[in-house]
Length: 252
Image (cartoon, rainbow, N blue to C red):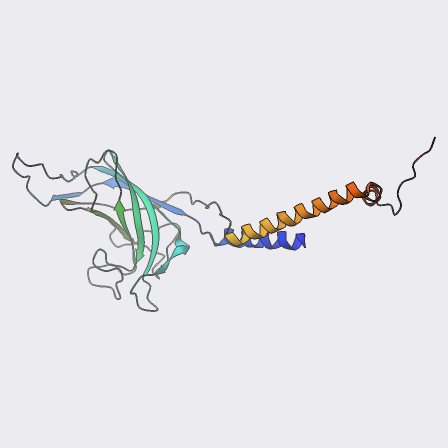
């Protein structure tokens, strides 16, 4: 019985480990090539507006996701290749660091549409887009809160809505676009894969229950064995030594 319980626990743990996909991380570096401020600065009596990072500002963006965690994009028609995958990441823009959270979209046209049913004349077909939101940085040099970050490219080998573990840039454009209420900036997005990470498997509740039952069963068996040893020591000795009768005790 104990062997069966432990075997079931091992099978459940193995299944949980197999279902946890590989976390891949892509990274891209570059410098801003376009910088636009929406508004002129207000009079000196008023607080100044945030100013866009200038052209030439260096940046590094990293995004992490599990390719196998794709789901059909909300509202996408059946049979489409529009998928969404949760993603996290980070952005280093000049001297400011931002934590990122958002999603990876396939065959979208963000920020306008999360599913492009058919390629348009100005949008590459089957592209991969990261739509991310910046968190609170320290220091907040550019005040990106309330804005978004859109990084996209066209993959040469994955045009069916699936996500590769390693990107292969195709002939269409790739771009990093950062926008908030006061400005927008752009730069190239040429991601490369860094070493994939195997997530630490977390046992599911069912496996923990099975392991617990096995431990309880094992403890009960040891308790019963100990109880028999105290009530009939000769029988215990006989059982442990493999003999059918109690050992003969020498008499003086």
